[in-house]
Length: 385
Image 1: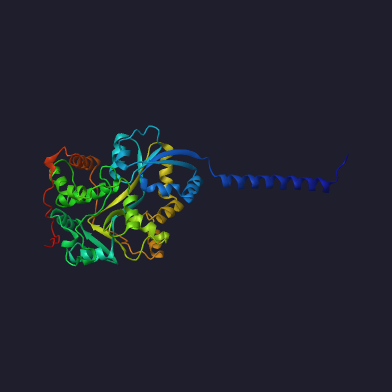
Image 2: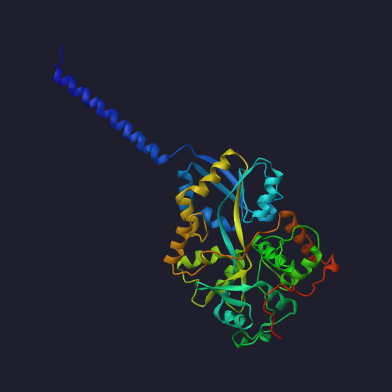
């Protein structure tokens, strides 16, 4: 049977349309599904738990082809664990990452984000510390905290009621910054890095030379606190909920304060203030890849614009400095754009040696490391009488 040419042309056109629609639908589905997804497991510092649990982060990772499962662990703990079955580790501190890389040659690392250490406090406390010569105007609307001068107050066992103008906080408690457990937590280890630098004559502790003297000066800052928590989230929550009476000064990550202020949930009040230690130190959240898929994930976290944006919304600083400036400005937060007096942490071995000695003091097995007088740091304001 003959078929009219016009009808043949119509059938041909219909077939072309059907094929075109099928291709379009297939392409649309492929676009939604993205590339083949790989499942990865890694160990992270607990402070990054909320970030990895965020549905937006999970979706962005899937877009990049990753299904990521994480388990929290202390940064110091991660450096000593069996990592055979892990694709990556993501401790909060560079020293632990350095140790892991030494133990596993050929591994790669990247710093997707970082945050400076800071002190969460209150306006009445700031006024007292300004009179004592501990807190100063850092310029551009932020305040600095003189670590050397503070250490001399602790060495002389100064109480809040002993400070001039202390009527707003006239208590018999020692002047102390609340930290986490230095044996467990990276934030406390970064605090130890700061105070050991000052105790060592403004030099990074490099080896065992004079380390007992340095630790003896640092010990009261930790031991006089009494019971301390393992996670940086707990003392910060105490600061937010229980107020100045419980937590006059708390060592935190800057990112914690920024994230809560940006959440606009009322937890950060006008009476709360952030101080920046001088010197200060960055907590570099260092991603160490243990296999090829882990390396791809690390690169994605560091370079993908959406991942950097999400990290900024959790208060972290990234390579996109303009985005960070815009974010804090949108939320009316005054933080230093650039910090000048920044030190590097000691090596993992030097930091570990100091923590081990502090553990001995905690356990009472090394009485020779009794606390000694504070440092005579140059250009520091004398403690008030």
